[in-house]
Length: 380
Ligand SMILES: C[S@@+](CC[C@H](N)C(=O)[O-])C[C@H]1O[C@@H](n2cnc3c(N)ncnc32)[C@H](O)[C@@H]1O
Image (cartoon, rainbow, N blue to C red; front, side, top):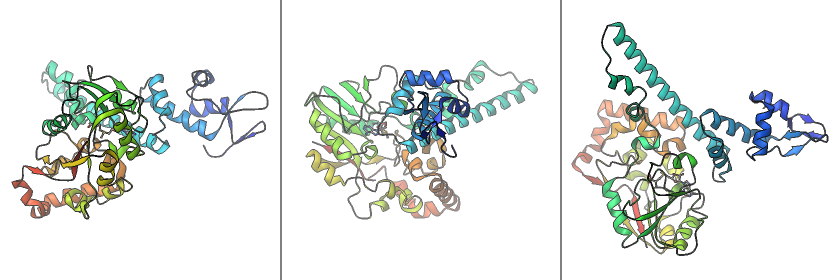
């Protein structure tokens, strides 16, 4: 919105009618959002009419954008109330969801074109081929962001489950879509993102909407608490780790080691193509600091060459995977470094793969089955 208006004597506010017109929604809709607490105009004109401040308008924009993406009002209420998601994070998420939708639409158009061509040539299109366009196989092919490539890697899971020892009740913090949850144990999940919670499979462990820094559980109520590939997302990692320690007798955390000097050079991707990765982790606590907060020891977790979980380091011996958008979209690093850095890194990698330069520099990797790329398991 270009500039503030004066509504009665209330400066920099917009009336409900103005907002309705600008957003192309009815006044009734805005009244309903107010009544259910979704978007409450923060002021009233002297005559008692609703007056929207810039912050109210920003929140309305988020609500309407999620609505247009098909989210339900209850889900949206949780999304916009999340104190860990600021305006920029909402914009990034909305952008990702829209791009995913665009990819899906592109793929459907391509499938329709293929079928039209086939039909024009008198070729029979099988029921399987027809359903491919609307079914999960297409979605697999174009990627549903996280769930497209992120799943439990059994060899890493074995390390985590082993570290849980004889625990029977386990809290999984930053649980996402449920990877690495030990199905043989009594698991409670904690996940602040409604988008991630919404992607948990049917039958997954019950999931509480909360953040690591403030776990809604009493002291020592779980045998163990685990956190996998999530601590670097927390607003206050040390506070979150202390919370895990408070609610559980044992803590197991899969995280990343930035303590060794030159750690950025450990992985060719960050060394040669994406040095911005270091910025993403600036401000992330040292491994020693995290181990200290927990009273934990750290063990290296090598990444297998054919790692099933599409985490950032997963494709160290399969470099062409990083050229695939669906692979990158399931790794938050790429979103965090921004599109420019992403495009530059991908271009550089593609050129080096084509010219043989990547192979020249990294050829010896083909002889390795696992690589230590900085993943560490903290175990109390
Ligand atoms: C890379 S995913 C990992 C998910 C899952 N543990 C796995 O291994 O697939 C990181 C998760 O951390 C969650 N997260 C972000 N901030 C958090 C916080 N403050 N407390 C707990 N989880 C958080 C995100 O919503 C996301 O689901």
